Length: 91
Image 1 (cartoon, one colour):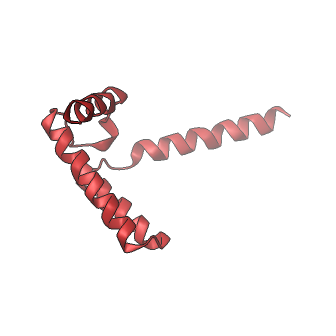
Image 2: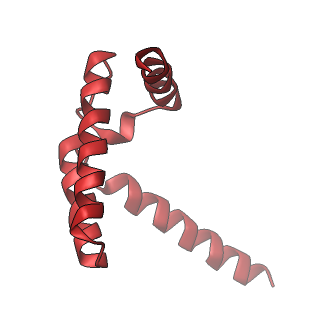
């Protein structure tokens, strides 16, 4: 029974290591990867355009509130909360 747990733990650890080894992506690079995924998934062009518009607005707002966008992995909950507050102020 303990062997299964050990094997499962090793698999989880390997997965975490693989995630850490992925190269960092800027907001723009991550967005382009997301849009590619949307097209492959078969979403309508209008849906992809809507997502592009919304992410462009998010990108501009994050710049406005001075959030660093060099690596999307560094985006924190606090950054998202700051964005929400910014949007509420803008109405």
